[in-house]
Image 1: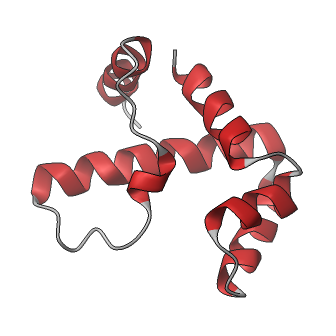
Image 2 (image 1 turned 90 degrees about the vertical axis):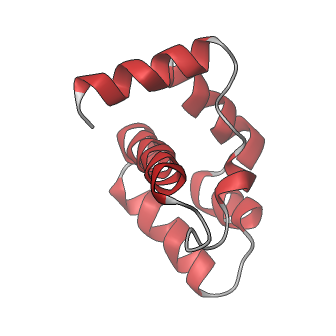
Length: 96
């Protein structure tokens, strides 16, 4: 992420306008260009937070859970040993 993108996310986080991770589930194919760019930026930010906070091994575990058919909440819980809500709160706080 470039400094401009980080600043945009910081401002949105401080204003409480970062969407829930559940809003990023599914395909981005139906989004227009700006919407898709924003969704990818948010997704990248959440994944970077996961790697920075919990490590690449835990990210790999979460991806394996998802590949095996687990829903995102269960995958996060099993891989990071915290709830999806706790992860989301930590991620949003990290943006501020």
